[in-house]
Amino acid sequence: MHGPSGDAPADQAPEELIARIALSQDKSAFAELFDLFAPRLKYFLIRNGSTSEAAEELAQEALLKVWRKAKSFSADRGTASSWIFTIARNLRIDQARRDKRAQLYAMVAEFDDVDPDRPDELVSGYEHARLVRAAMGELPAEQLEVVKCSFMEGAAHSEIAERLGIPLGTVKSRLRLAMRKMKKTLEDLA
Amino acid sequence: MTIVHHPSEETLIAFVNGSLCEGNSLVVATHIAHCGKCQQAIRDLGMIAGGLLEQAEPAPIGKEARTACLSKLDDLPVEDVNAGTQPLRIPAADRAMAPLSLYDSGKWHWVGVGVQQMVVDVPSDTGTRVFVLKAAPGTRLPDHRHVGTEWTCVLKGAFVHDHGRFGAGDFDEADASVDHNPFVEKGEECICLVAMNGHVEMTGWLGRLIQPLVRF
Image 1: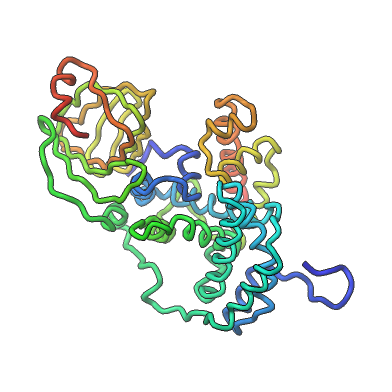
Image 2: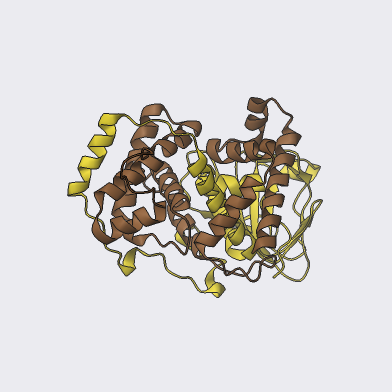
């Protein structure tokens, strides 16, 4: 984003950039956020089956929505990246006007019943994200690949198996192992 | 309430990712509304999705598109947050039925001995039908086989089949590999929310006899 020389400010955390937009309609913060996320969203959407044009369009639309909704972002509930992911997902499914999935998602995101495995869950969104990143970092590459395919392509396991050239059972067991390992890491760290 | 049967990882990821159809999303959301463990799981999955997005390889955006996008900001106010746009906090006691309450539903009608069905009005372009099924205590559903998938979240009571006992909040993902013969526990009626893709084939002689009558 910034060259190594000159007096460009150090890259800010995306949460900071969103705060600057919310506080003072800061366009340079938006530009930085755009350069960070629009191309990555585009990649994500292409892997999810969009054409390059549609993905570029939707990535821009998502970032403009981030601008408009900047004041509703709350850093103690989640990370900027998970929020931006949610916005892009809702735009993608919102094309049918009667579709209430976005309402379903918003509703279940508010539920906070106790998880018997993690009864003391009091970590902030930021801390939670740090733990999740740490947990992801510990996954073997082959497991991470299956997790990536599941998320990015929204593909059924059978399609992932075909694309990676591995048996269906292996896809399922790798994903299960990955999720179990991450859960364990989160429970241990929390 | 002890929940034993949860959606698979594949299903929870597909839910978070937006790749489940609306009918299946409703049944999964209803399970989540019952289940603290899956509420936590989808928060984790949301964070993982964000983490994957951060690590995604950038696909360059055209210079002109970027300029055009930035030029829109002048006419685009950063909206103030008002209470009306924030999702309501739903008290724990009302959560279980909250997802279903977003939808209209029809009237109860009988679909078999001891079994009533109420269609839930979920728009679908994937052919998924959503309904609530109410079966009297002790009802034994005819032997049947699934062609396609049938996802169920129990709202009240319990049923039992080859894969175990399913009580309130439990989630059952049945597909073509399940050839089952569920029965409702004695003592209490059983109410389930069901999303069905494809159809059900009755396998016993009785089932074949009533197949034309049973629309679920």
